[in-house]
Image: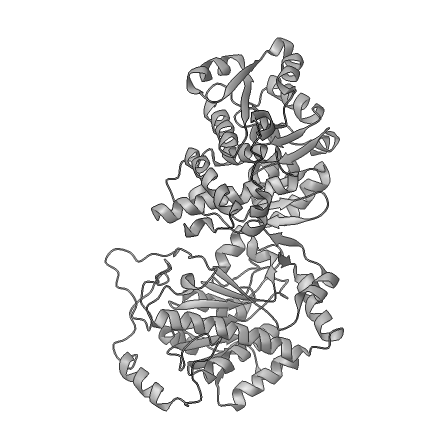
Length: 602
């Protein structure tokens, strides 16, 4: 299990560790900061060696740069390679520093190695070779996140980095555990510049122009109000820096629960979060602001504390899905493998039905039939081989639908089916009246706009698969409002419909009627292609034939996302993927996951 915590749960986690487990808060802060320093040291080491930075560290995915260098634009002179091997490049507006702005790199390294204490020798678990060759700027706030920043500063200083800390507040505002670590850093000779409200930010701008990386330690998970004034200006300066930006816990300005920016927000390249993933990091906007996310432990056993404070969601793991994909019995036949009915398609939208049905076949259904309007069924006859079709007679709609539904294990309904009155009558008859496993998507969802409570009366089991626009129509709010609070929206949908609700998008969310939530961290922008959702609907319908519904939904979502990642790994592109190609990758992904092999390693 990879637990995901809310702001309140993480606060309760720390409180329980301090009050009930008697781990001092200053120790938790030390462990958090040291863990972050280890991650940062490893990134510095990889960059200095010309290796693939954070993307080369175990379990970390590359993030493409949002600001590529324009043709003819000179790359900034940097201590590390100017173009990040992980795909990132200098930030927008990057310009070379003045010719005399740095010492010669090789001479500087040689001098530092000669002067560094010999007690620093490689040891098991050491994240890098010391001394570290980097100029690091750390911007601290007056709260606990700033205290974490002072711990990071002290450890990087001890490891040989050139460290400069800027405090975005008067020093006397730093209290409690943060004050202890502030004083330790300063008394050990660490460089500190105060930037209280009203102070010029020119010294910070000058330091960032010469820095190899900046650490954001202004605000953490406790922030629950918009950032304004002086601190917004500080964040603005951080976002104009050309060096790598690493945030502590969450990027300053990010709501740790909703993932929405609270006014100004830091755009980080990497985020080192403490203890556990925060739910706000796993929204599309949170993921964009956080970049690659690293989790470091706090030096306390998780199980007893999590049993007390709980968690709001779990990340879907490959190992878990692999355990669901049991080998078939040698005696299995097509009806046992899965008999799926796809109620989809209309004139001009044949492709939606075909994509859904073929995805069900590729995911293991033994028999798939497309049930659609008579004129659409006739148009499909020459385009299907392994699939069967059965027409809906509008004059005998309920009878023809009941005949088509007889003996089916699962139904996928909605893709391209139409929004007219006859389509609505068919959708109501199947979704509300058929006592079986149903995946409700696209047009079928839209028919329940303004009346989501009707879904709570449905017979059988429902899986709803909306994107933010469809969920917004269902709930009577805008797609933007859904995106601003994805977790709240999906919870509301479950409460109204009593169904499993899958909110598609970057970091797909699955919410169950029993309160559990699951989040998929796989996938990439290549999946933003017409028909991708239809493929997912067919995959889930096929998996429902052999799995418990929550497992089928989680498996379908992860396999679908991994198909996008595998395609991108093979092509190197984040665009151009066809929906039909997703389904073609599914059998190989199922085989790899069932064998316990990471599909992206083969």
